[in-house]
Length: 275
Image (cartoon, rainbow, N blue to C red; front, side):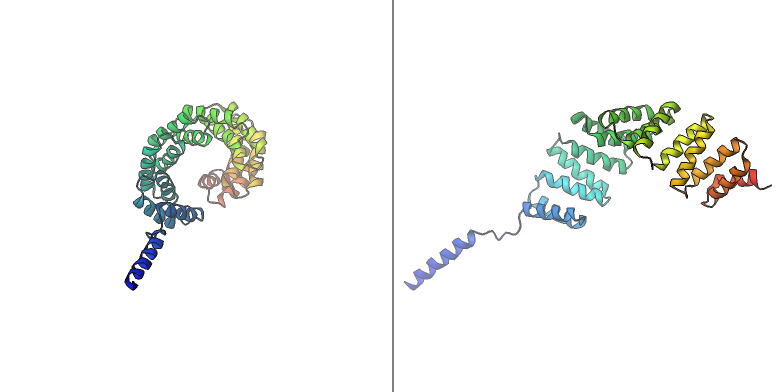
């Protein structure tokens, strides 16, 4: 009878134990833990947890996306690409997967592959403005200014109050030899963001090229006021002063630029001022 009671008791204990899992955390548990670490920028810890989740559940698609993102943020772009490849094999219509992989390709200087992925993003979502801007920037870097211009025009159609969009389009117009359109866009940049120093320098350079010297001097002066240690602003204003026969002012500006080791300013000082 005693043996029978012991057997019954053992059976009850076994049943109770079986109601609880002692196999350790699940893939979902590791995924949640990895997300918490990711959100606190503990990317190596997140990668470790995501890797365990994948080992336990190899078809856990979203984990590849998150681990790929963590690899990207630790600049391990090859591994990030591998993870986004797997993720996209499960989720071939997710524009975010293509966008993230495109950014990896960009950092790996695989620009054509980056453009291909950004094309996929915009084919899925034509209003994915970040992808449009990034693709335009890549085209610009590659010297494909007509293609860049198309992207910046479309970007501004979607986001007409973006000073960055106008700035990028202005730079593109400048490269395409369309100074009037570039100036119009720099005007919009400055109207939206009056403290954007580079916009004054770029617009001032165009004014100088067009022989509009008072306007150029005004823009370079504003740039200097905003950023007194910008050697290019000092140098460029000096060039304009030299063109207007104000040599003393030109030498003074080049001297300021030379303080910041501006090589052209140093050369101009020797050529025009030290005699």
